[in-house]
Image (cartoon, rainbow, N blue to C red; front, side, top):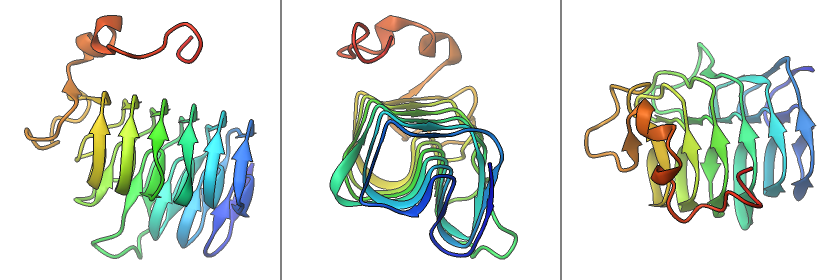
Length: 193
């Protein structure tokens, strides 16, 4: 799927209250502000994924550009690369999963590379809410989150993101990321199968 728009652009929808059990595979999503591989902005998204590549000017996410308050993200994944447009400001935010997170994210992951920026995160660009049992395999310069958020039992591959600050929590080696023992407390029977 290929989408080219302005603000609030997504492979499934530009804006939605909630999204469940949906996907947007392949292609490229391009827009301005609040751009996501699946949805530009929503408050709730669960059991959904996307493999689309995403490019935008600000608040850009592999899955969603903006996860608004009042809902949350659960059991979602984003596999595509996330980039910032050439006209993006130096303080623009981008995340492998979500650009701006204002609701809790649980049991989610991202694998695509994220634009090199001091305000980009492998999982989330900017967070005001909690991130629990999530991981990223992104090469982001900031590990899991560009800024903000409360992290719990969440990890990023430090070997893939060597420029991430040493103080960034959750950094593990590639070898450790491949060991189930790293993910203590994760549900490998019904969630992470």
